Length: 245
Ligand code: NAP
Image 1 (tube, helix red, strand yellow):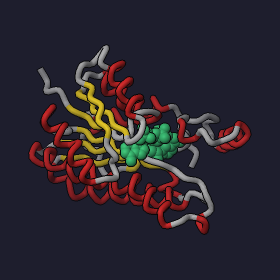
Image 2: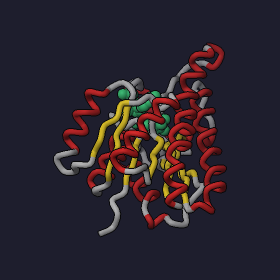
Image 3: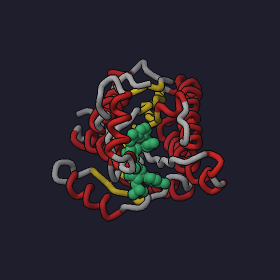
Image 4: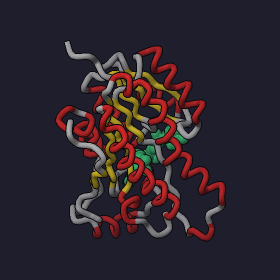
């Protein structure tokens, strides 16, 4: 029997993270789902997924807090030994004119979108390096590749995630650990819930595929990147944007 692998998907109480966690749960992985605020919702998700996979565990943790992440990994170590696949998905966005952004806003976005990637990866690696195997997948954004007006901090955080991905992949190649990122275009989630119908239609007109991406399409890409089918693929930032950018 092949060993049952463990995956942590940060920020999986809804949207892209939830679809990724669902995919791995359906494929019979041990799955740790996580969020910072909506814990009741996370427990409900855990209970639903346990109807087809008993090894789904919900852990509340603010991934921007190193000590909290350390405790989360202690719990995972106790339950499953460690994390074989880490999906750094948790993220927040904020739209606004750069001049009006206060230092607190910078800290909050960078902490959740970038420091969390450092926190989780840093702690996950102890186990992966011992095993000489592992896969890290960062959920990034096309704005990290090209920058977006009125999303300067968000774009900065995702641009840094892209460089982090490429640099760490080089460092960890000899250890058998792969690091990749999925740079998403416009995906149908609550993160885009602030858009009016008209704004959404205008955006769709710019996208050659003439629609938003589906969370399941991100999940399939992440699942492929985590699988042995992608065994020579590392250091890549893959744009998943319907040929938008
Ligand atoms: P979403 O629907 O707003 O979900 C974000 C998830 O992250 C939620 O589960 C949220 O849970 C969690 N989260 C936020 N801060 C957290 C923290 N400090 N600690 C732990 N969990 C935290 O967003 P989404 O659209 O699915 O986005 C997921 C990822 O894709 C993000 O990194 C985002 O930047 C990226 N992305 C999205 C799009 C898009 O069009 N949707 C495009 C490009 C990139 P709680 O609020 O309950 O804590």
